[in-house]
Amino acid sequence: MPSYDSVFNAFVTLLVTIDPPGLAPLFLAVTRGMNRDERRQVSVRASIIGFSVMALFALAGALILSVLGITLPAFRVAGGLLLFFIAFEMVFEKRQDRKEKISDVAITRDHIHNIAAFPLAIPLIAGPGAISATVLLSGSFQGFAAQAALVGIIAVCLLLTYLVFILAERIDGLLGQTGRSILTRLLGVILAALAVQFVADGIRELMAV
Image (cartoon, rainbow, N blue to C red; front, side, top):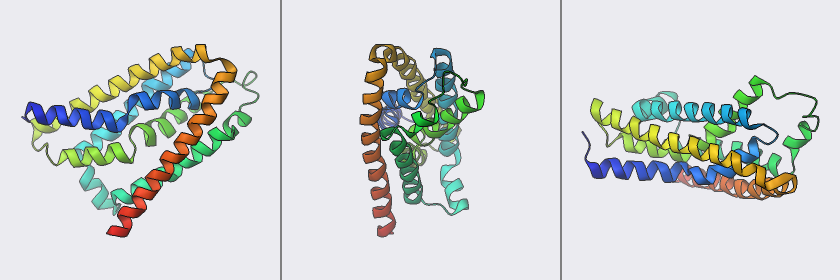
């Protein structure tokens, strides 16, 4: 079994990397137009998918990337580009343009599933940073008991993320239409900067190889 210090350090590392409080406003932005039950479905599904992806990389991350010939820097660049696309839509409200008839067209189950998988589960929850941290931590958690402990740590982190999403949904009612519009654009700019940072870090690491 890993030591208490190792478990605590892994928990803090993953929690900070996933950053549930930072994901809360992004969750509100990408689920704009959904009611409480639909947001709950998205939060549950995104948390489960995020946990599944991170658990997979905790158990076999290094092997998966090496077999596919993918480096972590390349994964970081790809994730950053995808995030930038989402940020562009948030800033210029392209997502809202596509949903301007939302009152006449119900949000489908496929739409809920798509939002949960991308961009929430991947790359916001299980993004390049979280996957990188998971793969690196897995090197220190060798053996069945240690790997089980690491998966348990991931489960706790994703449970906390789910709880943050549920609380974020309640805050949405306080913002109003104007508040949501302003918040969406501000977060779009922040997300764009985060995306550029992902790409820059990935390119720097690729150049150093």
